[in-house]
Structures are given as C-alpha cells and as structure tokens.
Length: 228
Image (tube, rainbow, N blue to C red; front, top):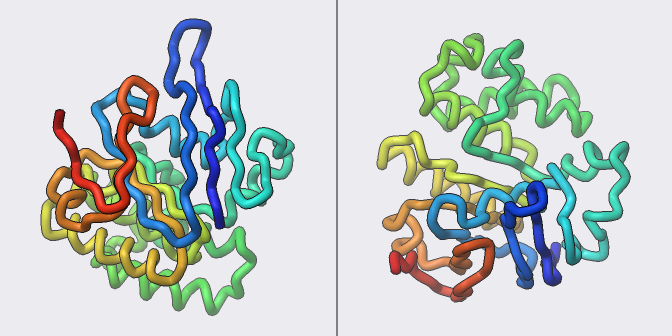
C-alpha cells in the first residue's frame, strides 16, 4: 500500500483552511507519527484518508485508487481495509463492548465462531473481557478508548489511522497500546498516528511528520517531537 498526497488542500467554509498544499508519500508497512499543535490539521489529514470527506483541492491516492473519485455507495467497502481510532471513539451506544468489537469482523463476513474466538482474544489482551457485556455509557474513558482500539485492529487492516489513541490512558496502558500497534505494524499494516505524546514519539524513533498551520513543516525518517 502506497499513500500519496499531491498538493492536497482542505477548507471548511470559505475562510477556514485546515490543510494547504500538502504533498507527501507514505510507503506500505510504515509507522508514521503526525505531530503538531492543536488545530494544525493532524485530524483533518487522517479523516481525509478515511474518506470522511473529500479534499477541496489536490489528490489523495492509495495505490492507484483516487479517494476523490470513490462513489458514496462504495465508501463503506473501501473502509473495510482501514482501522480507525479517533478521539471521540465512535462506539455504537446501543451495542455492548463485545458487539462493538465484533462488528469489525462481521462487515468482513467472518464466520460466527471465528468472531467469538477473536473478540475474546483481543478483549482479554486489552484487559476488558470483564466489560464485554457493558454499553459505552457504562465505561470509563480509558475503557472506551481500549474498546475503540480493539475494534480498529481486530481485523488486521491494511491501514490503521489513530488520532491520539493514548490520550486518555495512563502511561502503562499507553505503552501496552503502542506495543500492540507495533505488532500490528510488524504484520505489514501501515500505521499513521497523530499524537501529542512527546515521550512516545522520541522513544520509538519512527518517521515523524510535523504539521503547523495546515502545512507540513518537517518530515524526518527517524524523527523527534520538535516542540519549537
């Protein structure tokens, strides 16, 4: 999987510029941190890749697929190859923890016995198996985040998009999540993670793309979180 941004811009309304003239390439199997201050455009970049909305200008390509040309009816099928972890979790309020995580495999048409086995495995791995019959409203922020991450990675997607996945987690759990993301990456999944966690970025020494004011200001193969 090769991801290309070609002079991509995104506006909301007539005056709000979220991204401007972004050009970059991310190779298959990379692990990339996207860093920058709040409002810099990190989340917009991820949501464009998830095709939550189209770019205002330029092109976004995944292999030879132009995301701007995907018909609305085909977007759900396109998203089956992508795992999402966003700040607002996007859990379904009327489904339990087990059902939320199982949904990622149901849309891929896994067999029922495979779904039950895999969901049990991942929930135990995230230490939320005992919460499997609870609904999102009954979870703490950390439990909801772990449920969202479990749902995102259970299908072993080609691309994992993570927007502050450790934001509400304690340091020990945060590192456990990063270990899991590293494992998923080792299977060949491309991981793009927006984060403010300086320690994680500086410790892992992965590729770091810095965004400020909607523009890419720095792109380093083994980068650090530059605070200034």
